[in-house]
Amino acid sequence: MFNHTQLPLRRFRSYFPIVTGILLVQSVVYLLMTFNGGSTDADTLIRFGALEKSFLIQGEWWRLITPIFIHIGLAHFIFNSFALYLLGPQLEWLFGKWRFFILYMVTGFAGNLASTTIEPIGIKAGASGAIFGLFGVYLYLFLFRRGSMDQETGKSILALVGANLILSVIVPNVDLTAHLGGLFTGMLLASTLLRGRHEKNKGELDK
Image (cartoon, rainbow, N blue to C red):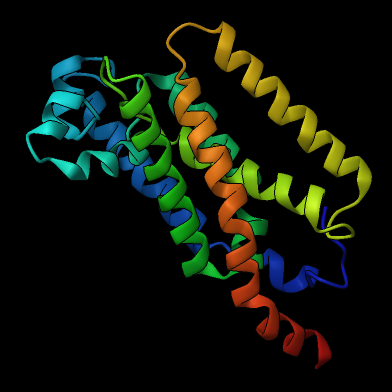
């Protein structure tokens, strides 16, 4: 996907800790929910930290973060986990593990905040805002960092983002606002995070 001059393949293959950790955490949470009322049960979702505006108004601000690791139903869990597995590792290498973690959490937070602000009704959960944040980074790289990925890959990413946004509109109970919040936040953060890694990456490539 990225040019080999920018991402040494050998190191890329051995560098997955944050993505693996996130996948592990959300898998454990999903299993705990499944055996404690079910991941589609409203009371269980609230108990595990899903986003619901009345609780947020009462001061439970952490509900803007915990839903990133909570999924409603098996299909939701599998889709987001698979998307993270596909999209996350190369960005983790590119930014470094802690910058990647910040990116993932901030875009997920932004998606949840946008959702509860614009579409305040209902119980909300899922990593979709963060996943679309990763999409946002790829879009930024393709549109504003020419040469960071080949044209065919970039066009595929563009088509994939478009298809997912269309599905967000036509599929019931999918939170388009959270997706857009994560997407645009990812695009905005990409430049700052890349700037922080530029000198280090350059030094490694010159060795």
